[in-house]
Image (tube, rainbow, N blue to C red; front, side, top):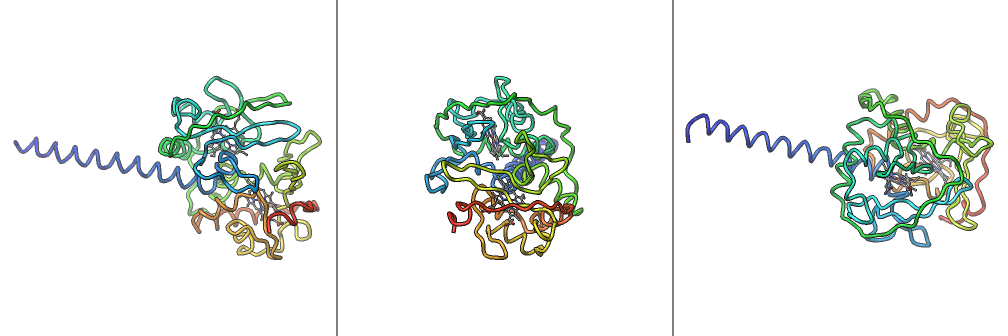
Length: 297
Ligand code: HEC
Ligand code: HEC
């Protein structure tokens, strides 16, 4: 071999090694987001009657969500070519996540938190798509969803890069408002049942039906001292996010996504808590339902 060929071979090796590891990093980031702050499995993995996740059906869809506005089944987002999204392009999957439009051009939300995902960075949506390509394909045909309201997709995403994690509150805001969709559950609905983000951000009171006779109502997570979590310490909030336990020992019921939030890094959890503590107080007293108080001890 001549010297230049040796140099080329070495360069080639370096090139492949670095692209392979860039792809590994992307998949790793996607795995972290999907199984941590984004908690996609909270909706996309079907459940047993006791609400535990069905074994071997990770992200295979079919979870039934009912509300006056919709009667939907989560989609199979595994790479199965016939019942999942194996035949979709990367761009189609990214569009479903950030704009709520499927491969045929149909609008697919609510309740998928597409309004939150609309501001997800280009890097993070790419990471999620890359990870979804690597999970086991599960064959699972899902029934069709129906909506009783007019549907509108979200606008073209801006794709703005996430703020630096060194800016704790800004990064916490990004995690909460672009990935972890806290406000899609924790915001008071207006008279049409739509979360009133403008006036009641984080003030709770959204009713979520887990099944017949199984209603839960989301608590107020603003800094209001009487009706919100204004008296909780940062450690208290972190414990609710990771263990599903309140300072008074109440076990949090589904769909509070603590089984996924517990996979978040300490740094990201601290950022989320720091941002949540900046929420202006809104007085709104929310009563837990009887089911919620007793079912998930
Ligand atoms: C609150 C529940 C919920 C969460 C959380 C959620 N989704 Fe969905 N998603 C749904 C429902 C319901 C549908 C199916 C709507 C329909 O039938 O068209 C869906 C559809 C999709 C689709 C379109 C697939 C298809 O075949 O139409 C993709 C892709 C998708 N979700 C990805 C994700 C990813 C990735 C995450 C996490 C970042 C996520 N979703 C989080 C409820 C959710
Ligand atoms: C899919 C809906 C959903 C999402 C997303 C969600 N939560 Fe919750 N959360 C709930 C429900 C429901 C409860 C109440 C459970 C119960 O009382 O049994 C709850 C309870 C809580 C509590 C306990 C409050 C109290 O007074 O007991 C805190 C704190 C909380 N959530 C914070 C968050 C934060 C922060 C995020 C985002 C990082 C988040 N939640 C995302 C549904 C959700």
